[in-house]
Image (cartoon, rainbow, N blue to C red):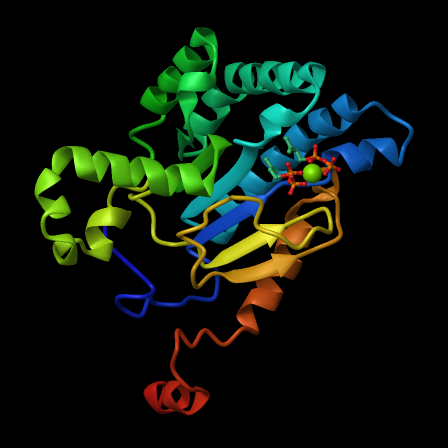
Length: 253
Ligand code: IPE
Ligand code: IPE
Ligand code: MG
C-alpha cells in the first residue's frame, strides 16, 4: 500500500483509520500512589487491553502502540528486565484472546536486541494472528523513528546500488515502502498520555501530517472514555494537508 500525505491527499473519516499512541505515565501513576513503578507498568497492560477493545469497537483499522523505545535501555537494569518480563507474560497470556478478537498483531523495532525466547514468542504471535484483518495492532518495541529511516535507507542502498549514481531517481514511495510499517497508512491521530508534549523518537517520518493530541491522563487511567474524548477532539480538526479552508469547503459542496 502506498498512501503518502505529501504525495497525495489522504481521505479523512470520522474515526481515525490509524491511531498511534505513546503510552506514557506508568511510573508517575505508580509513584503518585506510593507504589513501585512496576505496579504502574502492570496496570498499563490492563489499559492496553481496554484500548484495543475500544478501538476494535469503534472501527479503528490500525492501532500502533509505543511500548519500548530505543532509548529506554537507558533505564535502570531492573526496570528494563521487568518490562521485558511483562512483555513475555503479556504475549503468553493475550495472544489467544487477540486471535479470537480478529486482531492481527505485529511487532516493529530492532528485535535483534531481544533475547531469543521473546523473539520466538513474537514470531509465533505474528504467525498465529496473521489471518486476522479486523484490527491491525502493532507494538513498537526497541523502536526508534530514526532507526526506522536508517534501516529503510540501508536496505534500499543494499538492493539498489544504482541509486547512488542517480540520487534524483530516489522517490518517497521507494523509501517509505521500506519503513517498518509500510503496510499501514500514515497515522491520522496520535495520542500521548502522561502530560509530555514530545514525539520521543516515535514515528518520525509517518507523523508528518498526523493530528497530535496530548493529555495529562496517565496511561494506566486510559480507556474507552478517554478514547472517545480524543476522537471527539479529532473530529473538530480541519485536515487541510496544505490547502486552504475555502478549498475544503468548495470540495465538500
Ligand atoms: C511509559 O511509562 C512506559 C514505558 C516507557 C515503557 P513511563 O515508565 O515512561 O512512565 P513515567 O513517564 O516515568 O511516568
Ligand atoms: C516514550 O516514553 C516511550 C514509550 C512510551 C515506550 P518515555 O517516557 O521513555 O519518553 P521520554 O524519554 O520521557 O521522552
Ligand atoms: Mg515516561
